[in-house]
Length: 130
View (cartoon, rainbow, N blue to C red):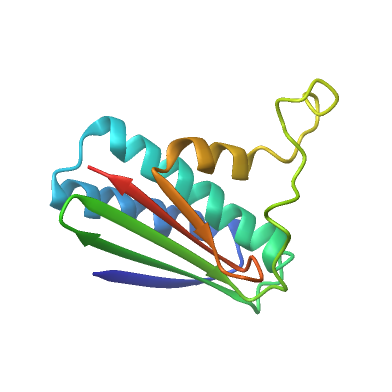
């Protein structure tokens, strides 16, 4: 449906947000589901820029959007080495509660209906029912 590739620059998040807005309106996605898609997409792209590509502006992040039936899919791919997505600290654990980082993946998992990573962890695919 749509695809965008941005440099690893936090300022480019606005372009991704605008595209989510446009596609959600075009598809008639409810405000509740739109909020889930927007927050999850921003978290995923932010993680790709900061953690995946380590803020290297020469590396890119690609965001692919597809809609099929009542399923909206967002795929975010960075050029980093990936990470072990099965071995993240629980941000709700009392010893982690004050950590400034580590909530993004937790938030994405709680908002998306389905979330999958590629083997290396350099790509996340999130699906939302609408």
